[in-house]
Length: 106
Image (tube, rainbow, N blue to C red; front, side, top):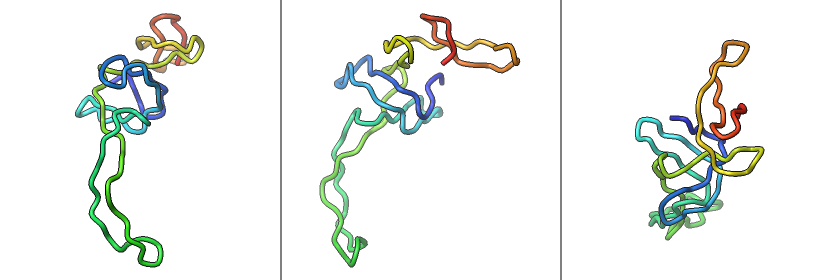
């Protein structure tokens, strides 16, 4: 999977098409990523008395749901546009990610 935690991505398909955000978590075994502020769903949380001084916490909350990695693209830091990602070996012999459009390291 070419997208990792901390990357800045743009959504290319789905109900949140065009939205940008940072990857919170990556799930390579499921080919999904969790993007901040994208694919928001409502969760019913059970009311518990675990809050500060016994305050009740619970009710309907919203949180991000994972989105398939094929529906997001990495944002090139220089051009600020979506770009495909490839791999290259640098002069130190390390494998690095490069932008397919500009050919520069990400």
